[in-house]
Length: 247
Image 1: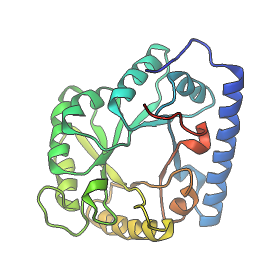
Image 2: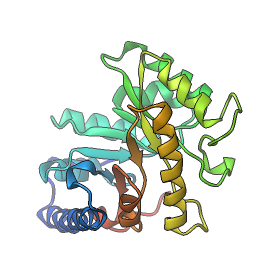
Image 3: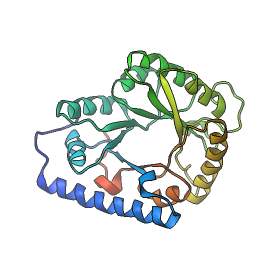
């Protein structure tokens, strides 16, 4: 359950402001090193396990993009934030089961984890009543491990090959193919993972030139992700502190 008690504690707001300043400085420095425009990189505040009051505080500090990875938590939190009159851009970043598609499209502006044709079609069907198309990123499997999710680059598999999944998104008028997302595989150095992702993204854009978003990098490796072209970095602990233990 979330707790969006009417006012944000001043000490918590100060903690969030300090974390935000540090993360913004890291992103700016990484962009400078990479020779990139700071405006090219969006920070997504990943607020899973944190209360709606933290989302409200971050919004008050100028954060516009918020990420969640579990629908059962995100749906209620998004409703609380909306009831408080705040409308961040919600990103669903976790692995998504098809039976949750109808719930997720009610609040999410972007889904980062489309990794199968069946999920793309479920999201398209669930989005039929939306006023505007749902932005969708195809999650890429960098190491080919199906347990971690992700469509498979170079695979012709009609269900989970990267191109079949991308085409399923692009073919739906209710979805907009925005780009790619990936998580660095366990045991892989970030440089290796994001260099591989950059190769996949370069080839992908030749076929889908409008799909320029690249969601990669988290608190511990955002600088390396930016070096390799990330346009969206997903930041949790560096911004909000260590997470409460999930029950």
